[in-house]
Image (cartoon, rainbow, N blue to C red; front, side, top):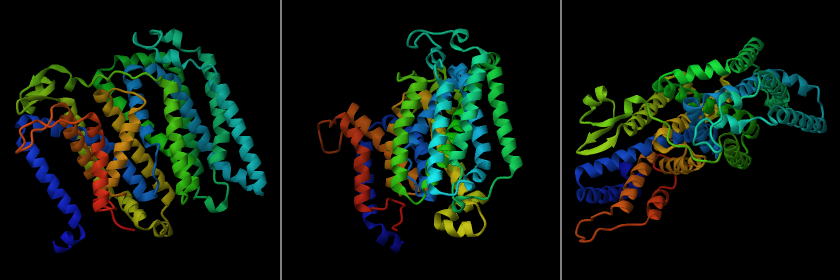
Length: 502
């Protein structure tokens, strides 16, 4: 106990002062008011955590600050929205990605043999430029004139009005040609991401595994293309609850695959070069949002409808009655609180427990924790640390994308949402301590509560003890509260609450 006080004296004093101030503020409120504020803060904390946990895992193992993490949050939200409301967009775009995965994995497997035949640095530079030009040309030919705007115009609120599926889709022959061109474009891309130096090579995957992955990916790509109309009809005929679950699954998978692509193409060649990684991920964050706007448009979308469990237009008196009534709100100390927000809180808690068990109770978790401590030793034991890196990047990206899907019924879907949550996630990770999973959770709780109380402070004011007038603040105070908390924590403990000095 003495050592804890000695090592964290300043931080404990700040926490004690904050608790006293919070108790004074809460004492002046009715129980239903402060409980509602705290539940709102917990909702924000859960969403912040889904982004911050991935950032913390990636930095803890790989020392990579991924400034494109917010793009994955937005990607998950848009993929989930398309799955739920506009599946024709998926059936006309996913074939491109599946055949690209097939060609890239196949070319990467045999790419080492190609680069071994290029013996000089000059030759590698020329080959890289040629492959880039060939890949870019094939991608341009595959996507030139693709009717992306028409595929997105699926409702009467779309810009230009709704377009029927028959008029939005291209003929099958044209789509087959586009998909085949994208398949060919994946071959030079796969050669580009293949290791060029012997020292950069990893133990190759068995050829049969690569052939199986490539064959399955290509088959899925062409199959999706061939079942565009019946597939759309089938998905739209599903119950909203099943479509919501499918939206979470596909959005999460999309985030994981995007994370794998980012790690392999942009991060892996520049391990040990943090400045280059920062510049690349920052550029990717800008380009990624531009790409999302090109596909889905710049307009904000209305909130995705929540599942029927949270949609009935009533107010339950208790949790027991909600299980039978499925009301959209529940009575909490005399005030209605949306049940979907309680679902968001439950998801955040479950993810915290699940990832914590993964890190503490499984072999892959043991490898991850060992890799954080000494990656070279883990590599010396015969464990492929690079593949562990890829898994961690995919896991962190999947969590962010899942957060985007879950946030869609709560916030709506718009391109700027990723930047907002990424900023708060970075602040939470810094507060909790870089690389600390528990610290990320604590940091998000602090930020969620600060933002919720700050918003209440702006809207209704706070009646402090011994002061007759109600104190109100400007909206800027609520937005700046999180940054102020970060500054105070770093002044008291520069490494963060759970961070360790290097």
